[in-house]
Image 1 (cartoon, rainbow, N blue to C red):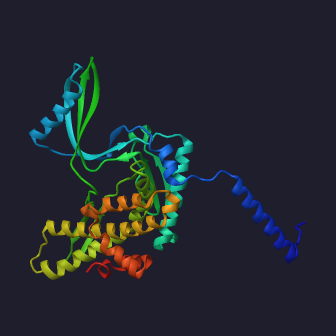
Image 2: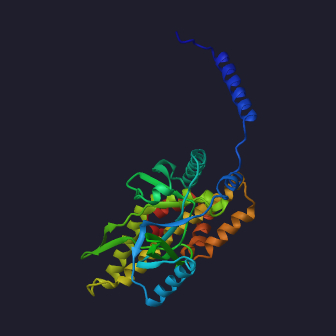
Image 3: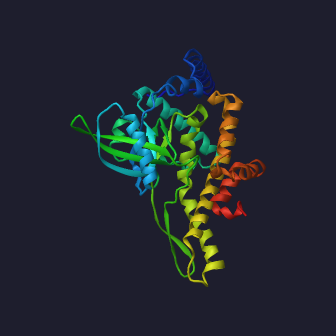
Length: 353
């Protein structure tokens, strides 16, 4: 039979339980700051970079660039007899594998989930948080297709590190009568590369989105403590705003079509691309302006000196992809972060005039 407590007994039981919980917390092992945990568990990991088919586009390159990559390969194999059987060239990204034990993987996921939840609450979108799963970008993942986001499901693939846009030469070799493959790479991008993955159709009175290319979302765990802490929250919010950004782009292109090109009957592809990039930069602005303010608030939890956060922010602002961040940060400081996000979701033209 269930025991019924008086109000006084219930209050006393609550006080005792709270005291016991406080004792457990005070006697238990104190959780390390993110930076301390990162430096012990993530920073020492060995970096071995590999390409992945999900991020490789075949390209034609000049003979001069082919010779440069091939010369780099020959230099690396100068003491190994070999024959080049085949060469192919791609533009893509390289990833360092995240080979960690289950305990470290679970700890990274737990800390990242908490950071995501706190960040989404900070911007007022915590009630729209997607269903997130974490996957190690390890040897097994390197050889298999990566899951892509769909609807409310967001798989986050955790690599140790990832490159910006890179020229990749893949060579098939014959070494000691055995076929082997070797990769040579050359960076071709700096900072945040903006890729256009949407296809638009011009109709008599508007521009519509007809297709979207959705890529797997890969986050880097090992750059520095601030970047490592912020990667999962930032990429989650980017995914949540994807539909809004596409709608904003279609709205902007429709306005331009009606004003300048409808009478001409066509709109140059360069105009579509430039305004698509503009809308992507607007998304970068609202996400990273909020992120910078959030990180300053999270300094104690991260356990990093103020200058570490300032350096992270300064490095991002040196990239042209984030050129609109200072403008939006100022609006957030004046009007509130949540107000700015609501304006962006309703119509980005309310923010960017």
